[in-house]
Image (cartoon, rainbow, N blue to C red):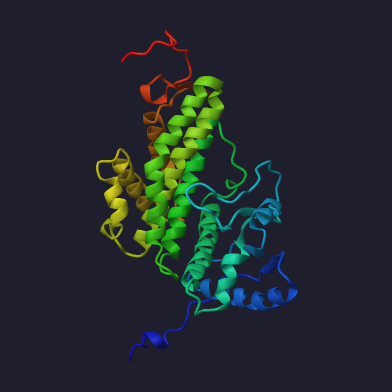
Amino acid sequence: MTEASPEEQPLPSVTAPNFSISFSGIDAEAANRFGPTLGTYVQEISRYIDLRGLDGVTVALDYPAALAQLDRGYETSHVLTPTTEFGIGVAMTPAVIRDGTVKSHIVLNAQYIFILEDNQHELWPEALHLLAHECAHVEVTRATDTAFPGMLLRQRYDNLISAFRWQIINACWDEYAASRISAVFGADRISSYEENFVVALRETRDIADGHIRQYRLHGDHRKVLADVSGQYGNLMKFASYLIGHLHGAGLDREEAANAKAALNNHWFAACFDRLEDALETLWQSFGTWQSRDEFDPIGDLAEAIIAEGGIRITRMGGSELYVDVPYTARTMPINLFPPLFPGLHRT
C-alpha cells in the first residue's frame, strides 16, 4: 500500500470547544467583521494546540481595563494588570473557574490582534505568534489541572517563601512550555526574547539591591522578600521564554548569540544552565507528572539566587521563617547615617 504524501495526510482534529468571542471598545461593524476571522484562526490553531480548556476570547481596545474587569469565577483581591517591566504586555490568558471547572480565558489587545485581518501586513507573523502563544497557555493550564486537580486557583501556601517559590515556579514553567509549544507559529521570536532577557540580565541585580537598600530604611521583611524575589523571578521567567522558544524551534544556544555573549562570565550563567535542565526534565513528562515535588528544582534555584542576592531564609518549623538580610557594601544606602565630619574635605 502506498503511503499518502504529506499533502494528502488528514488534518488533526479541531480541539477548540464552542467558545465566545467578546469585544470591548470596538465598534459593531469591526467586531462583526473580525469575529469570524479570529474564530477561524483559533479553530485552526486548535488542530495543533490542545484548546479543550478554552473558556473564551476577549478583544479589547482598553486592554488593561479588560484584564481588570475579567470575570474570573472566584473571589480574589489580586487585580490583573499588563506586564510593564522589561517589555509591555499585550495579551494574557488567566485561569478562570466556570461551573467548578478550571478553564482559560484569552484577553488580547485589539491594536495588535486586528493585524490578523491582513495576512500581507508586515506584522502578521507577530500577531499569529501572539495568538498561538496565548493558545499554548490554554494547553499548559489544562495539563496542569488534569495532573493536579483542585490545585490551580485553590492552593494555599504554608508561608511566604512557599508562596514566592511557587509564583516563580509557575511563571517559569508556564512561559517555557507556552513558548516551546508556540515556537513554530508565525514570527521567529528569538531576537525579542533575547532582548528582554539581556536587559533583565543587565539590570536585575541593581534593581534588587535597590530594594534591599530601601529595606534598610523601612524594615518590612515581607515587602523586601516580595520585591527582591519578584525581580529575580522575572529574570528567571525571561530566561524561560528564551529557552522554551529555542527548544521548540529545535535550536541551540548558538542561535541566541546576544544572550550567549551577555551570559559569558556573568553570575547568572550557571543558573541559566540549571534552569534549562530543570525545564527540559519537566517537559519530558509533560502532563504525566506524579507529584508537585518534580517542580522543586526551579524553586530551589530561585531560593539560591535570592540568597546570593542578599536575602537568606531559614525555616524555623511549621510556618515560621527567619529572614536575614545581611549587611553588604552593595546594599547599604549611602544616606543611612549622617557624615561623621560634615564640611571636612580632603584635597
